[in-house]
Length: 252
Image (cartoon, rainbow, N blue to C red; front, side, top):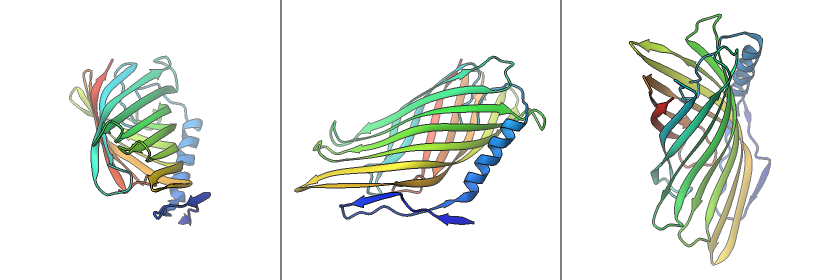
């Protein structure tokens, strides 16, 4: 069952208008069910890996890459490169572990002022479902992200801000001394997009609303090395329905 998504604010003076998508209510229901399960069931403390950020220690530091449209409008896209840092809090015997992550990536295109950025911060609470199996973990997370596009003339740009709420599940598969962890994290997000374009006259567009998204993939942890590959589907306001993500680094 789905419900029609109606942006709460629409004021477009440029020719391009936002797409209206449907927000599946099943995503919200899944988030509520997972949150209730986490609150009702005790668990043992363990490393957080549900959102593709495995911890072998208290710190996670990695190279991060993704892709975005070159100008926020056209189909042409480029890879963005940057970094990710996450910190795990709480004692080893705590029933719930908290982690905080910041990451950023960017790329200059034709000129220093012509580029793309992707910045985000995420707070997550994770616990192992020890009553079922110690290899299963669930996570609830909230965050904020900024996607930005700037043109070389310094007078044009697009900014997209979103506030996602996510519920995820992951399962550890032991392969010798390595751990392979597939994960899936559906979520909903409140977003707002602002456009500023200079082309003879000032053109300003804005729209806001809700979207439903899915982050999924798998991570591999071996000794101090951690790798994660995945993707994000359903982000509103992007020219592609999905984008890939990759991270490689260490946990200590």
